[in-house]
Length: 100
Image 1 (cartoon, helix red, strand yellow):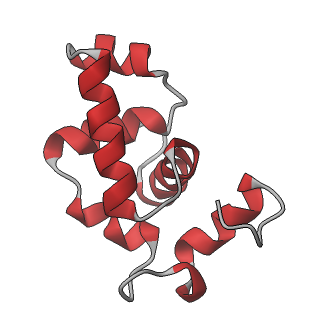
Image 2 (cartoon, rainbow, N blue to C red):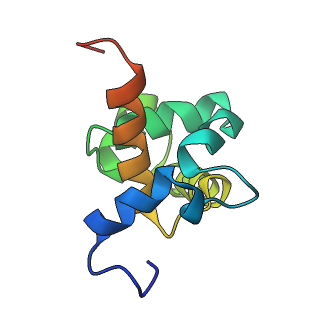
């Protein structure tokens, strides 16, 4: 987390603005670069799922979940799982029909 933020919630606002952009793209715009399996994990992050929950839902090991989360964090250029989960939540609130 950038030291200029007082809390992780404040950091959320930078995820979709130009000042928080890396390579000219915000974290929400970089979602398009996730693989199909990373997308499955990303979706479950928006629900607040633990690594164990994700591994059970997708029939993969927790170690594989950790690898997918590390890749998601890198592709989104965020500072960790918490910010990746915030991006996931915001993305799904903005882009998914109710009930999905």
